Amino acid sequence: MDMVGCRTDLASEELPQNGGELPGVRSRQYERDGFAVTDVEVLDQEGAHALCKPIGRYLTVDMESFFRREEDAFPRAVTLLAACMGQLLPLAPDASILVAGLGNSAITPDAVGPEAAAVTLATRHLKAQLPDDFAMFRPVSVCQTGVLGTTGMESAELIRAIIGAVCPAAIVVVDALAARSSDKLCRTVQLTDTGIIPGSGVGNDRAELSPRNLGVPVLAVGVPTVVDAGGGLIVTPREIDKYVRDAGKLIAYALNMHFHPGLSVSDIDMFVG
Image 1 (tube, one colour):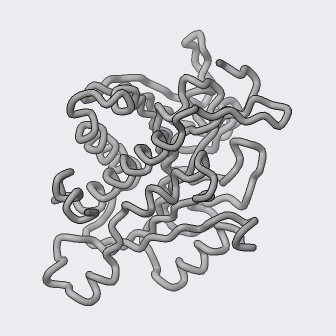
Image 2 (tube, helix red, strand yellow):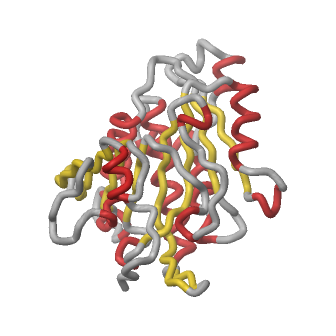
């Protein structure tokens, strides 16, 4: 199902279907480790207007083989995503990071962020208490922001408060996205250095989480879990529970590998238990 005209969070879905070019937008497609990658750069305000996305870079990885559970697909997908994260969010040694899982854990299609946060290694306290034992790790803080309806606070308000307490050098936000085509649902991971406006894909815009708003680099990672079919109708896959768990684990393992380059997938397995 391709809902032409419906909103999408995916920059790749805003590219011309006939392969044409947009002014102020540069894009290319390539394959890496068996996964198709679309690399889109919005270069200026003209490109932002043409693509309906902020100036910045967007990497979209087709994870079809991972969700089909092909042999060795998980470690290959984790390694690729970690490399993509490194392109968009290079980190100085020992730079502290805040990871924020956005969304509502009680609503499965909106639970990608909480699922990822639950598997991301929180190490800030360990670095402080046992610096020699955790010398190979960087300090990472992890939070789940919940949603305005249950906390009474915007995610941006919570994150700003945490920034004041832990002073991270960069922030990673993980959230569920909306796609235009059902073929993209739970089959795609988008990474961008522009940040995110929570809820924008389904018309429920909250305060943006961006480098401009938060004052530090922001990497946004998301997986489309719904199609906004219009008229108040939201479509999601039948096996969304399994897909969201898998997506959260995949993103978290990639974050762990990016933050702590010495870790392998088997090492992360041991730490997350």
